[in-house]
Length: 137
Image (cartoon, rainbow, N blue to C red; front, side):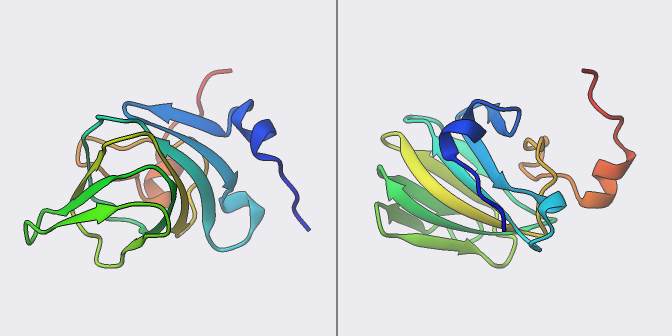
């Protein structure tokens, strides 16, 4: 059984921050669950262009509001508490939080923990992570 407290994760190196977001990585690849689970805050007024070429992601909005634009179709969808979106086709998209948005996110395959988006808006594949040098402590 794995038990973790969000407050503790946010105070650890498992709380990853990047431009426009902060992600508390509650479950990671090394936990052996077959997916990773994150509580992510998307900051108001950010514009986050992403495309997870190496992962599938499902996101449930807990608090806040914004939009997601599907760049393949140009469709814009409103996001608010209770909404889920799943990037089941490695969808190229832009998130535009109008307010801070609190979300629960699941990634398959699971991430290792310190990933941030590369220039294409993706997290690296696990094989790419294995080739990267370990961060200096």
